[in-house]
Length: 329
Ligand code: UFG
Image (cartoon, rainbow, N blue to C red):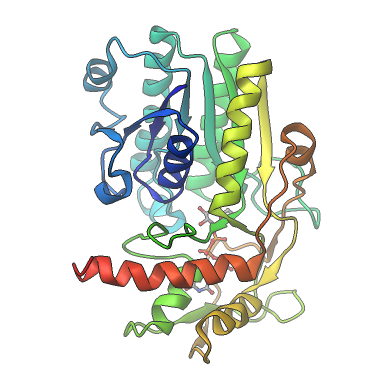
């Protein structure tokens, strides 16, 4: 198959691009490299274009034929989204509208979309199912909710099949440790802990230990990026087979507190990691854990990697990332 992967040079997008390529598919990555990395798509076709610009986008893709589109390109920092709402709506919502316009003009019908648990907001149930109310509490989650709605509305017109995959906390790295999470600035828990463990001179702060959880720190459902890759492949195959519009949670269905993640990281590193307890971070729900049974039913998808496997792979990647950053590899 021939696939277009927007945001394919980013963390999750590059893992899926590689998996598709390993499966023998032709992959074209479309990325503006505003946060993605050129090295992450070495060996794949890369089109550098910004989704906000319809005419260059149309021109770059003119005459191309794809069996499906994986759409990852988006801004994804919760804090930044509060400071720059228009930037988020332009990149995420307007960018998606442009992409879908070109897809419809070109006759590409199947789209797997990178969504998020942030569409739910503060959960009202211990496990979050897809039927849970969509009440995002930050601009980032709002834009993803609107992007889902846009895809659903276009689907209603009979023009597009879509699978919106709502990830919980994506983490972990490739088995050969040559690919993984690298954001600047980094805001995510596991890379922040591991950068500290590797000797970065930045303090590690745990945002709040007074939540209503057993140890007082926030609980999240961490899911390995390679498990996410399997689900994306399965979702595209579902669209090719049956079409339709689907929303599916992707998580392990098991929650870990920030302190439990820290312990798993200490286990991976083989030593203690210093930290400080700080204030709560605005907009953090106490607990976000997936009910991922629908993805199991519909895709036959079962995540294979647990928290320790996630942090072990992330730690191995952290060593390699530092070599890359220093220009030694
Ligand atoms: N945390 C810390 N210290 C840090 C970083 C994070 O204590 O240095 C805590 C957070 O407060 C939170 C937990 O670790 O309780 C996880 O935080 P992350 O930033 O790693 O992830 P989030 O749960 O905030 O966000 C992730 C994705 C978002 C997505 C969200 C959906 O990064 O894109 O899940 O729930 F919107």
